[in-house]
Structure formats: structure tokens, C-alpha cells
Image (cartoon, rainbow, N blue to C red; front, top):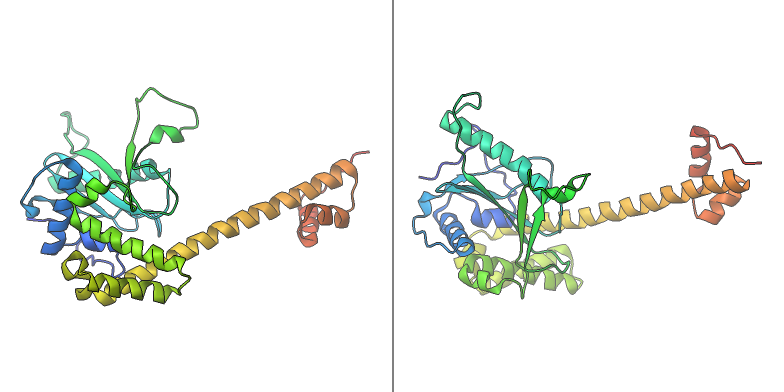
Length: 301
């Protein structure tokens, strides 16, 4: 029997991500789909979808840092996450996610860490399904040690996230083994194609959903859950635009700050007036003057 470990009274968020709505719910359909996904990834042939024990963590760190699906099979704890943007920090995120999953697992088993005998825990497996626009290999092993401030190749403390590219023309054999994953990616590809046509967000999503219904993707899921899928897809579309805007703003802000710093150097090293330094370096004069108030510059003789 599937046992979802969540605080008592907790309700599923209305705005699940589509990947999680497909593979990470309590419905019989979703159970079967995640079993197909697990079998395709691991080369197994399990037939009892109810043997999968589902655990989920939502909104662990902040908005876009959530793991989508995690479950136990035999002595393995598997976590799946879908990402539309390449993120080299997935191993660290996985470490944080699994710390919480293991804590919930031990609590459900009534086990305490402060005991004299060794506590056995399920083996971890962290898979990231990537469907972003940046070109990436079929498979990438992301390692926690790559983030260490001091290089350490000992392997004494390591955490690895396996990123699998599920875009068109990538890992086709995997997608053929798992029709739900293949149908999901066909829909995502349709979204991408519509974006390239310059359609509005609403037009992009509506056309893709209607197309998925005509193609009978996911055994009618898109027709059955049309309104919810529209809502989820529009939310993800808006998040993508927002994240892109935040990044562009960050780049612009960084460039502006660099221009102000260069202007201060021009004032200090060459005795330029604030007006001239700001103009030459392309920095806002008000920002240069404000910086001078906070950190007065001693002009070299």
C-alpha cells in the first residue's frame, strides 16, 4: 500500500509541476506511470505499482528548489526531479533533500540515531530529468566535490546527481521504454515549438494542450485534467520568464556596479571629476556620487 509521508492534515498544492502531476500522485494511473519510469531507468520489471512507497518534499528551500518525486523500492530510496534549466548545484540540493527524507524515514521506523548499533538506511539515487534549451550530453554525473572550495579528489565525502537529458534526440531508447515519459516530452517539445513562433503565453500553452488532447497523449490525461494542466503550464511558463528577467536584471546590476567601481578608480588614480568619470565609464552620476559619500576617495598626487 502506498504510504505518503506528510504532516497530518497537509494537502497537495494545487499548482503541482506537470512532471510531478504525472509521476508523483496517489492515483492508480500515476502509480503505474512512475513504475514504468523506474523500470525503464533501472532495467527492472516490477509489476506491482503499489509496492512503491511514495515520499515527497515540496518547497524545501524556495520557489524553484523543490524535489518532485521520491520513493522507496526494496532498499533503494529514489528521488526524481525535472529541471528546465541546467543547475550544477543539484548534488548539494540532493544532499539537503535526502537529509530530510532520511529523517522522515527513520521517524516512521521509530529509529533513533543515538543508539549503539548501526542503523541501516536505503541506498540513495538522485536523478535529474533535464529538458532545458542549453545543449547538454545525454547523461551527466554532477558531483558535490566539484563545489568544494579546496579541490578534493579523495572521494571520502561525495554526493552525485545524475542528470539525464530527455530533450528530443536524446536518450531515445529510455523514452521508448517509458511511454509516459515520451508523451510528456512530446508535450514539452510542442510548448518549445510554440514559443519559437512568438505566440503569447496563453496561446503557447492552449495550443499545446489542445494538440496533446488530439494526440491522446498520456492516455487521455490532458483531456481529463485540461484546466489543471493549463494552469500548471502557464505557471511554469511565467516562472521561466520571471527567472530569465531576474538573471538579466542581475547581470545589468552587476555591470552597473562595475561601472561605478571603475569610475571611482578613475577619480582616485587619474584625478577625474565625478562627472567625467561617470561619463567615461558609463556609470550613473548619482550612483557615483552616492558611492563617494559612502567611501570617500583620496586622489593620488
